[in-house]
Length: 530
Image (cartoon, rainbow, N blue to C red; front, side, top):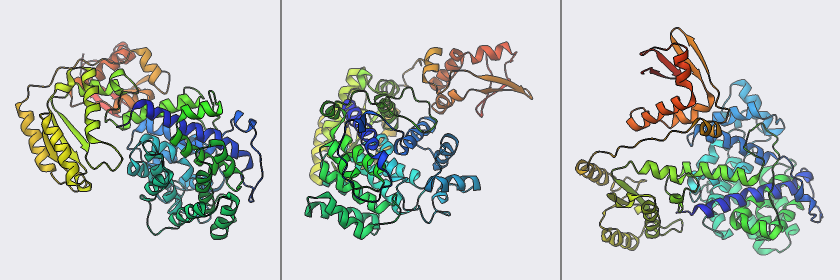
């Protein structure tokens, strides 16, 4: 369970750290030697475009449009159409796209020199922020991204940082975060060795320049953007700079090489650990603005607004309730309205505690939110204790005693091994047979103004008639269409009301549509009914 206020603060801190510290390092990229630059305030007062952030904004656009099941192809297609970057691995994946070579081959074909570059590890933060407290899920998102322009070690590095950063929403100890990050990469890989060697060097030496020499002796490469030396620099800067954001950035900068990337990633991790509030107060950051080098239409250039947009999508990607949802934070209120339609609540809790969470406390928080919203807490509940394969008997018995004391059916399951799932499904079916019909729910579709505000366009549409079929072109309608279940009466009702409010129905009638005529909206066809 993650409080929304904490979630947003850490997410905002992540992108503050990435933007500010990445800007510090950007002017010095490519200098393959240690530096002696002193910190100057102007280093962080004038923001610079940085591919570290640019591509993550494009990935956010894709995730908003396609949801969490976005295929790697859509990321690559968005890069080609909205970005003009052409050096190094970016040129390789662009050329491969033109050849018709798509992920995962686009990161491998004709990419011998850049295959272990920094291009993808610097894009990890968006995936962590869309999967907070879920290192494995964040790593899986990162893999879909990494194969666009890399293979193997670089993809492992993006997985590592995505998992580490996802865990940082609930963990602040750097040693623990490193271990969590390493849990999602192969045991036998060179990247893991870089990380473990660097951590050992940080414990042995105080001077980061000494650590740098050791790293370069073992992992140095003529390409300043090569993964291994730069990952060592990033880890070393975190260990030697933590918790000081500016010192962390300057340590990474003064090591040289791919300074915009090492600075940005170290800044993002530290920003996640500390949160935005503490960074803003200590460094007097104000309303930091970003400068994009790609074509993306965000609602503003404020890092705060960007962070809120990511947080809103994060709530959609993680429909487990967040504390504060009953007051409407994030998209929690809308999710609770959806839950209100349920006859039976199947409440799944993590009994293992592997992420530092207490299942009993999670249960109390969620039910408090349900009670605050309406009478939802009084709905019948069945509680499933998941991850039983990772839990002790004492943990299971403690939760069982509490839940049965609340008067709920209790099942011990493991989604990974399917333990107990058959019995759970059977009990759900039995209980549903005893419950009254589903509560009627009157949907509240968006107004025309709300549709325009939420859409990526201006709410405009075009209708053409071909062979008796009315084709409606309205790109902004696509995310709405994906949320509609045509087999559900109330969802279908919502769909019809949205069409009405948008003006599409009125226009169809002006064009002479008749009952039974076919309407096609973005490939979805239905018969018109008055």
